[in-house]
Amino acid sequence: MEEPTDEENDMLDLAPGLTETSRLGCQVIMCKDFDGITVTLPNATRNVQSERFVERPHHSEQSPAAA
Image (cartoon, rainbow, N blue to C red; front, side):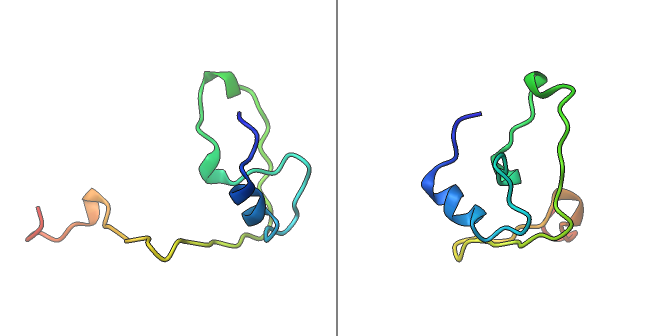
């Protein structure tokens, strides 16, 4: 993985249980290179979303009119 950006590091500063190797989960793209790794999730999380975030229903949650 590439080194975290300044923006990611700023968000990580708000994370509980931060460690030297902490990363935002949204930055981890699983691939065969990660086969066999151990991932530790914190007991607590802080979910932050952008003001520009627009929630969209999953395909299985769409209303019949939208299908």
